[in-house]
Length: 151
Image (cartoon, rainbow, N blue to C red; front, side, top):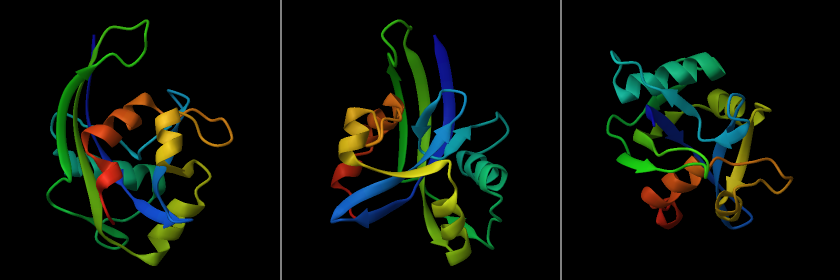
């Protein structure tokens, strides 16, 4: 049984009259997931995400971006993520950008580790060109009711 406590950023855009969410390649798990990471015991969920955005994308808080203070969702759940494993326990907060400057948006969109994925890809667990999307992403998609959320 494993535990994950962390936070992720929700960044969405509309292309071809469909909502898409920014996904980031997780090298450890070899799949796409929302950008974010694990929270250290001394961090708040928001500070965890700020640290991840600084480290992963070299974005500067308050210059490049500002997060909403309140999370879009706070989720606590247990789930069997892979058929051969025991249940994993999750405590996750999902945040949105309150402000994201043009430079930061370009950094995120041009980073080759990132990909825009739509609802169908998330549900299928695979990008159109065959790269895996985390089943955790699909779980968060449903638990936070992202399909019914407007930008």
